[in-house]
Image (cartoon, rainbow, N blue to C red; front, side):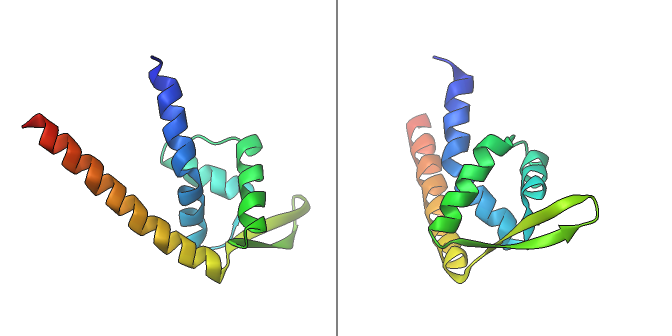
Length: 111
């Protein structure tokens, strides 16, 4: 079994949560999101990020605005909608429960 494949699948599973968490800190340009994820060792490429951003926008969880740039074409800045903020709060509770259950299981198996 390849651990790298398993790690990649686990990262994919939490990527939406991480993107929404980044945007909860404030509006961000796609490259800003990638940089924030990279800071915590979640390496994401544009080819993965943009389809997720589009899907989250289509689901009503994100909105965007265009902003002029001094260094080229206008930039699209993403932000959480009210629905996105509510969804993130639900994801946070689900994440806490999942981590607690996995920790409980691991501790129980060690005994």
